[in-house]
Image: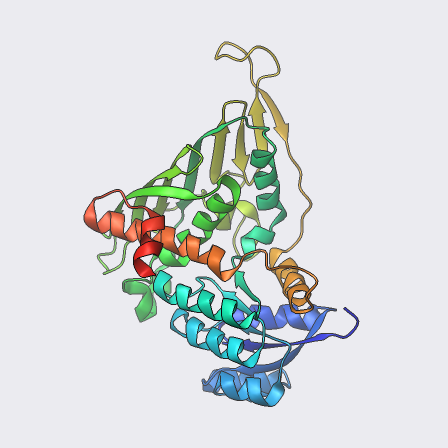
Length: 352
């Protein structure tokens, strides 16, 4: 790419400003403008010496960016992405792809109709740790995958819940946090065929869950459990274990375990356990540490987005793929509500 891509950002909240910082530091692109109606965003844009628009459609029409990063509230993902498709502007859409599977299907239809590429911001797929875990499973080093364990346990501070929507349905750890882990598990282990779940809000008493327990059946036959709580002091979560974001104090603990007939892998500390000799519980286990390269996945995601715009690479995670992750999260909510085993595939069929 010889010319620098002109990238605009819709939504100047925390993640939007992070994207803006990455654009400013990038050699591949430059900031074309900001779309956000808030006075705080206008002041922020003025400090960045960049144009600010209250409406993203005005930004698209006036600035004609090469791409738009949609970092707005979830309810705006679909209309903004549809406007990008109409304008022929590729978009990077923060997760979740849209609010629901039904609206995600509308977006997928628009992408097929217009051919405008959309990249979904499940940025952890760009993390070298997640890529290495996927490769370890795919190349058979664990044998046949049999069991998966996922943990997302930490304590959010009380002031986190001063924002009203975080105390309401859709604002809890299932849709806001667990969706990342579900996407990681799908990326590493393959599709999730069935879900059972229990949720609880007993700690805080808000309308939204604070704790959940999941039972998963993967299409390949492996079984998995995932335990989630944002109400407990604990080190077992991607945020605290991976070191991906320096804002969180890093803990040397795993948050995923992938077990197969030939070995087991803990992630993100990437310890591979297996038998060097005849397998069996009387035989000592051997431990090997896999050491993937270290880099910021958000930086890699931005580079990849520029390459997608240029037509040099295909989106690592498409709207259709991200819809599969959203379907699992919807299946978890329905399973917890009904006490039944729910198929994410059926969720997508019913939404069609």
